[in-house]
Length: 152
Image (cartoon, rainbow, N blue to C red; front, side, top):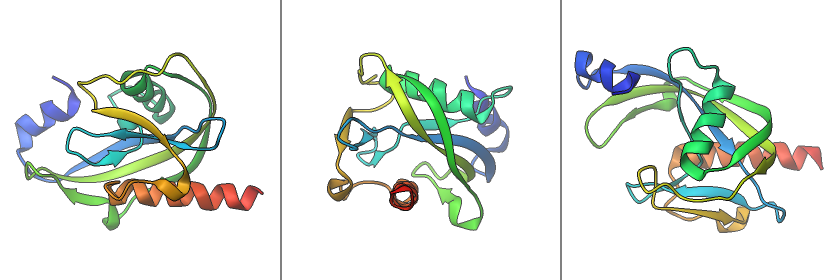
């Protein structure tokens, strides 16, 4: 079991404060990589911090686990926290997340989906982000697009 599962065994569905990272990965056409999650919603690659990890290490590890890609040149785009990031999951677990959002300047490897992590991996143009994209990830994508527009 991992850290979150260990904590859940102790506290049940009570609120947990969790830290994690999500990553914006784009291809040469500036399309954004999304993962079709096992719950049917789309989201960014990423996940929760494990004890002893930095947020950068979390981002690198989670991308590798979910996509088989090696990411290089992580740039921090922002950190998101507060009441707006408190969620009750379908299984009734309550979480409040602190999420660092990174942009990747380069990546390597052969992309492949791990079915234990998600159902599919697809690049989408900003104008084609699926309606089934979870609200939390839409916030991160909008932040990235605003940041990118400010650089042009």
